[in-house]
Amino acid sequence: MNDPRPATLNPDALQGDGLGCHSGRAEMLAAAQQAGKSEVLEQYARDYPLAPEAGPHDQPQSMCPAFGSLRVGLRMRRTATILSGSACCVYGLTFTSHFYGARRSVGYVPFNSETLVTGKLFEDIREAVHKEADPDKYDAVVIINLCVPTASGVPLQLLPKSINGVRIIGIDVPGFGVPTHAEAKDVLAGAMLRYAREEVAAGPVAAPRNGRAQLPTVTLLGEMFPADPVGIGMMLAPMGLAAGPVVPTREWRELYSALDCAVVAAIHPFYTASIREFEAAVRPVVGSAPVGYDGTEAWLQAIGTAASVPQARIDAAKNAMLPAIRGALAKTPIKGRITLSGYEGSELLVARLLVESGADVRYVGSACPRTVWSDADREWLEAKGVRVQFRASLEQDLAAVDEFRPDLAIGTTPVVQAAKQASIPSLYFTNLISARPLMGPAGAGSLAQVINAAIANKGRFDTMKAFFGDVGSGDQAGVWEGVPVAHPEFREQTRKKIIRLQKKLEQEAIGT
Ligand code: SF4
Image (cartoon, helix red, strand yellow):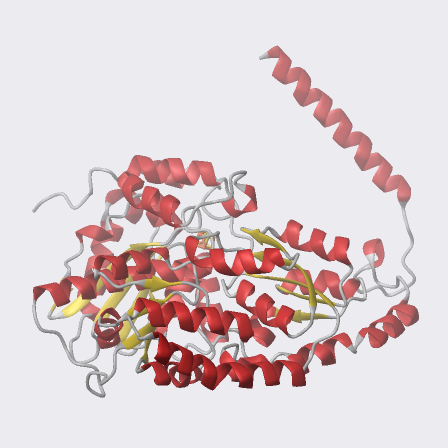
């Protein structure tokens, strides 16, 4: 029998304690490159570029990026998703999946140093994939290499492309190569679209569950609130177009329908790998989304033009929608200064809607990168005086809250916590903003209620702050049985110790 060890397996990835997102990105990257993963990592570097100064995205600041791919797999019918990675990573990812209602088992191929360096892990993965590939149950089996297997060069590309007719999709999703979980969704969606595109090129494929659409369709790229595709469909109808599938799709055969569209709407602008597949299928791609008055007007025009719809029909679609949007915006105004940050990729769209609702938006931070598909939204916001920060770090988001002292900070968990501590009303982007319609007339009034209610809470924060003072903050945080006693002398002793240690290290460095 052949030696199963891939020639490039790299045991250096197991050195020391540095085996995850707490360790240096540089070491992990170097190990992965040495282990034969250069090509995939170079593609990721092009698809998901870091800020010029690299910044904190050299390590994940939010949840593990692989969660994006895992979630896409878990939400698809007849799809098994298997992780290959350290047990602690898999524990966290499984926990988060079930927290978000996965209702599906997450597969796991465990490893230890020995199975990793001898190549046995790859054999275990192959065995697990063969066991899962039951065509009665699954259309596809997804296997995801996390940080350590990627850095060690576990070669998922050597797995069979299909087993018993079940497609096998192996992807590397390391935290040191894919900066955010939003972009990790694109890694899997792009891999699936590529597979489906090759199937279409090779011959007939399964028809959609409800038959092929009668009208030319617009594929919607990016997860959105379930009512939004319905609303978009109503906006497209006067142009003789229909809303197509949302990518990432919920079923394998929807991938074929997605590729079979007239136009792709890159509602979320960071799906670079997926867009590459649509472009390979010669489908035009349009950025931005039908949010607010200006956004809807521009989007309908761009979609209609890309789909070669006569101008009279484009105008009919605008006339059917725009007055209702203007009315909804005027009826539900938002008053107040707002900063907004998130990692979902829809931050600029939400900011546009807030500005059109009358809010004084000063800052938008997105953990996602700038792409040509977000240019129109960025330019619109900047023309209104809003500072737009792509690849925003937590530090930049917090600095914006500090600088603008908003009436409301919309952001990620640590931003919301910091704002609340400073008596600034705040809302979680993911739970409270993404869980509402944004598009067309339905989106125009949907944010006002929750935002105005949050802003009106300022008085309660001031009352709480006045009541509690600085009890429980700083050195006094935690549970105490008596009144906390400060010991400044301990702090002084520690400070001196650190200075002595630093001097010693400096002298040693000079001596070497
Ligand atoms: S797989 Fe995720 S949690 Fe594990 S080390 Fe990588 S980035 Fe961190």
